[in-house]
Image 1 (cartoon, rainbow, N blue to C red):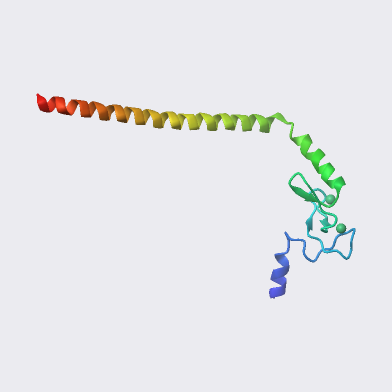
Image 2 (image 1 turned 90 degrees about the vertical axis):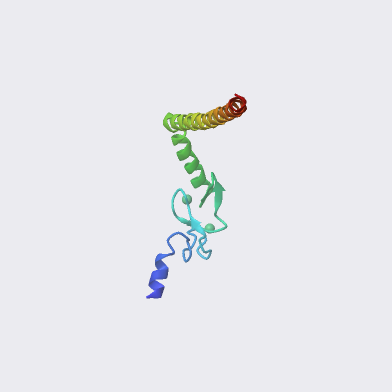
Length: 119
Ligand SMILES: [Zn+2]
Ligand SMILES: [Zn+2]
């Protein structure tokens, strides 16, 4: 029973699988592009991912570059940056406004209090 449940948890790590190119090498992970297992010898690191071969890394890079130049994500990220900067500026401005009005009110009170007392 325990053995069965442990087999289910091996989905992410490629333990027990072997590299298709080096049948005696245990696979250390799955290729980001073709999802086949690769060994430490075959692993190619590129674009923050690991691939089974340079060909896969290249095709993944082409795949990514095809989707990167689309204008929508860029527009949205720019909009988000703008919204975030405006929000931050608004918060800073509001805090500054509160600080200024408070300190002004404070000084006004302090100025008025002795005037009232003397009268
Ligand atoms: Zn691959
Ligand atoms: Zn290999």
